[in-house]
Image 1: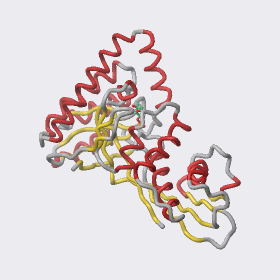
Image 2 (image 1 turned 90 degrees about the horizontal axis):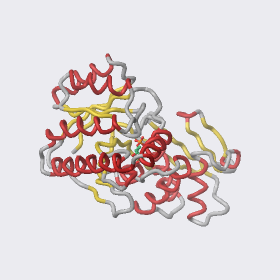
Image 3 (image 1 turned 180 degrees about the horizontal axis):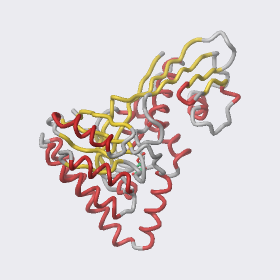
Image 4 (image 1 turned 180 degrees about the vertical axis):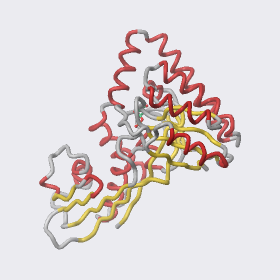
Length: 307
Ligand code: PMV
């Protein structure tokens, strides 16, 4: 039994989304996790994840192991106390801790492949809830945007605690993702923004309102087939993220390099202080913007189309 889950990138609204403002995120199909579950003659639940050099039997892992905890959670959900012998193979092309959602994608693909193998395939809604529970174990107080976009593999307009809204692009557009190669310390940056907000909530509430407005206009631009308007919105959103102190010299350098190379706009994406930035480009410029990002220090670039 096989299942996959894509990576993701946040287009607009990170951090403000923690304060109940809307955010937009899209799946990135160029990178993905694949999980295969097979019958096994060896006794137990054997896990092979070469990306993290893991080859172990489930009971040998600590209870809070990021992969072990997903498998245990599923067995618990399906009331399985004596799992059959099986082999779980996990492969991933999503870089870890870069803001592309590698953890949520591993969880989603695992829940899907295992539940199908055990003849109880779970609907998206349940996969989404379970992945969110796992995200909470490892990341403190996530907004839920990662698990949602990855589980539904569709562009989402996300507001914490509200029903899921997916949307379509009226016209496809191209984004270049540039990775600083620095792990994004999301838990820390979310905590720092909270401390700032506690000290001066009026000021930060205003910033969150401005970002909410950007997300709203961005969604309308995408749906009405005017993605070229997103460039300026990205630039504005990045400036607000700088004021939230979640950019970094490396991210700013990549954002500037993308704009100088002809991108229509650029911003950091995700938790910030590391991880990724994104740039909106005309398709013909994608390669030259990607090259400019590499010259400015990016460790990796991905060109993806949102359609
Ligand atoms: O670093 P990422 O891509 O997982 O994004 C974090 C996004 C935040 O809004 C900063 C936090 C959250 O839980 O939504």
